[in-house]
Image (tube, rainbow, N blue to C red; front, side):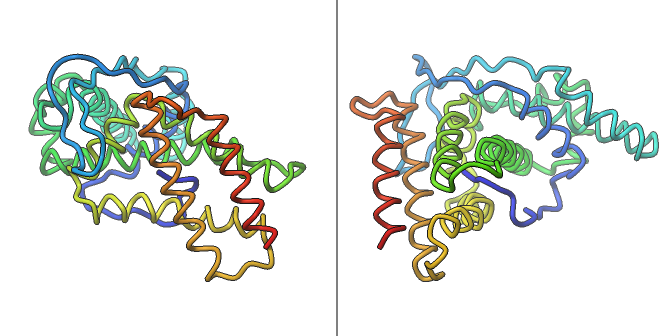
Length: 269
């Protein structure tokens, strides 16, 4: 989970042009709630919730959301690069829907390629295996999450606390998306490995959380900022999972009120 992309997530198997288009497209979707369903299992981190048959109702990306990005490619890219970028966007979108619907283990690469209008050979030329494709989708979802939170917490006139809490609220809202919850939060640590998952998640989120906390407490040093940033990130991650599981006694407004009390006490010390 992240607020702002502060460093490049480097991987030879991830196409940055395709990711850019997919990120813009996903940012156009409205967050959706998470529902549980009967059926098969999912691959999850051992310390996280085990869900059965997570069956998302992920609608297709709105075509209107894709047009600005594709128009940009028309102006700045040679024709062959435009085609490659559009193909990669379709492939990543097809993969996102498949991983959210079927889970990592059950998703079929041939079907993913066919749904994108490509061959298995085309897919293999871009992503050498299923894990590489899954990683690309995780990064795209994390970065779309980032854009949603940054938009919610931006503003020149707002109080730092109000802006920070708006970003936290947006995080919980986006975390309710079915694709994000299953791919990033439920299956991500198990598929990528905890170390790699945390590298992506923390590398994207912690620097911006520290900056937001610095705005709340300009007098605080780095020794005070980093532990609080880690605590807030961990709390938001666990809240996303708890809300998705519909745990009794866990509500967005109550959780944000508790977080505000903690932050005000920390900032005023």
